[in-house]
Length: 366
Image (cartoon, rainbow, N blue to C red; front, side, top):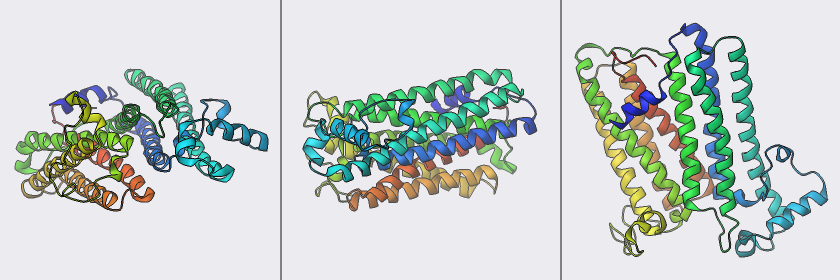
């Protein structure tokens, strides 16, 4: 299974004393929670059109917001030169510009805070010998990937300055979102491995059901992740503002124009009808898989932390599915759209917890 490969890739090599590694694990979980907030902020930034309000990438100097009237005017003049202003926000004035500017500035500032929240404790834990040597390369790689995420973010934003565009390129948006999910998953999985190095036994006959249940959870988790990435294309194309009915799309199960673009593969990433239908289909498959895993855990596994984690995954997928329908029917209000993106990280968390709780007892402790 592909998620067994993911487990071995992310599983920490540290087998040291749990008391010594617990602070490291709590630090990683704290950073992960900050990434979760960052994903929610990113959703609000995208939905309000704020992401293109800052035309410069200044990792150091951009930490401070503009305070003088002259600096505000300079930034506003830069913004007025891009298509989003000319085609969508023309004439909304300095007050409107400042409103979207502050949200994007907060998004970027929070990213810098996350960098410091990772780097400074990492250096302290390293200097005090709390990080086992085999774990150092992975933690160093996570810091590098976090820096790359900032660069990918700017690469995404820069696409919105192209002629005729009022938003960022969908492919770049999905790349940015995928990196955020990867970083979050790596942080959480590594922390879980430090907190629980060995797989916990399941009670009674349930031990024999562990491999089958884990496969069910892996399928549900994989389909949920695929749904999230498909949702990135929905967001990039603003496809949620079309076909605002459920379960049918303009009265049809499969919308007209599903294969309008040529070559055919362009429909998968550039056709609003196709992208939204695929997102719905993947979400429905993920829900069915999660319900199946939950039913197996409920009826065939005695009460245990592992069973509770599977049921948490089922509940989180069900909640996310309902939120997706509500977001669609209400034509993507900022509040629901932001919540939908934030709960996606909750589904990711529940899936990681369930997979971690169902590891094979004979596997190397993470």
